[in-house]
Length: 246
Ligand code: PGA
Image (cartoon, rainbow, N blue to C red; front, side, top):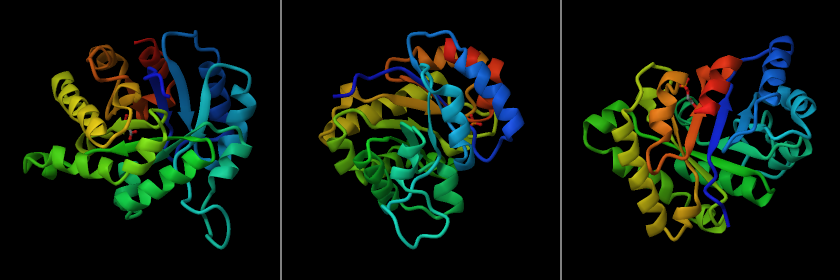
């Protein structure tokens, strides 16, 4: 059963270089241990570098996507078993940028989450509504459907799968959901997990979307927000570590 851990996970997206990563990973590896867990999701070519820099420490690493397939003729894809070979313990699935630019459906996201779970890699299932959906009063319906597609994996993971709520309108825009808006959606997500038969009280639900050192503490102090998924600010060691400290 999951323990509803507090998490701060960095999502580097398509950023980095061997030289730049070395400094960033070194700083992250030296982070003081706190109440929560720290992780970084790096581009695939840098998994080995993350493993070398972080192995044996408290910070975990992972990928930003995974194939639904185990192996075979799937050019460009990376399997969960390959992630495991590089010591990855996390993988993002269904990030809104993949839903948007790679036309990933919620059913595909569920199959990817399942492939990760089967290989022993914790899926971080990303959900969130667009601004148009929010303005149309459909935010909960959209997020509810995204979660429902993952019912099987959420049940089987017994609280180990992580859910990340990232309103699309808040990602990389500098617009953050207010703590009250975020808390309301997180409470809805936890209630939905309960309805779906998942271990809602054991599941970590992270907020993502323009989290910065200056707004992290108030967001993370909300009852149903168990930490954050951090994009831009995860690329600057001092910012990422300040968020982790919050
Ligand atoms: P952001 O990205 O922190 O840069 O808004 C968050 C994410 O996309 O995971």
